[in-house]
Length: 208
Ligand SMILES: Nc1nc2c(ncn2[C@@H]2O[C@H](COP(=O)(O)OP(=O)(O)OP(=O)(O)O)[C@@H](O)[C@H]2O)c(=O)[nH]1
Ligand SMILES: [Mg+2]
Image 1 (cartoon, protein in one colour):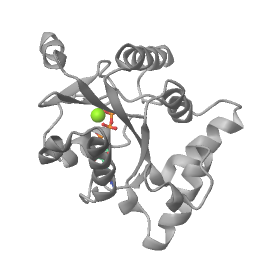
Image 2 (tube, rainbow, N blue to C red):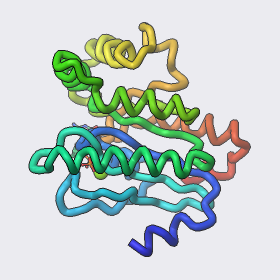
Image 3 (cartoon, rainbow, N blue to C red):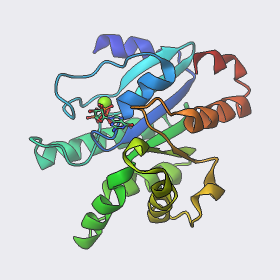
């Protein structure tokens, strides 16, 4: 834990990965940076953000929120509160948030929450990030699980839930369909590079 504290020292920029448990945040970070983020033995039990340091840039893997089997509801609230507090505390240096969703199941899960008249936790997080003024990108992961012709309708359904009118391709600068499993991560890497370029940090391209 002390190690984690050290690694953040002097970091001026940060990219955070947020999303429900099991959507593929850690897998994506690994694909993008070629570095493995430390993971706990059991998924969903890690309560603290984990970091990779690339020069003065931090890549942060947030604990997953939402349903986690075997984890009490109260603990889930603690996770959500910690994430919100972490973001509020570090807003200044967070240049980008990547919200990762499990593409093939997102709409179904969101519908279930809405049926119970609850706001899906990832939609709540997406709105929160934008409210605090953090540039937020949506990574629609696990696209390897849909047929090619099913991709556009799937992404349209997801973006619509997040308040972006279809067709989703008009949001190419903030929506990236990816497959961490297949290593198909180009759209997300392009967006990250574009943001780094805008921040005059082309020097960091060598890490991506
Ligand atoms: N089919 C498919 N499976 C994936 C993909 N990305 C990740 N997975 C699988 O999804 C599971 C969860 O991946 P993780 O990277 O651990 O997910 P996470 O979001 O970091 O999960 P937490 O740390 O629990 O919040 C693993 O079994 C991965 O192999 C993908 O693009 N396609
Ligand atoms: Mg993880």
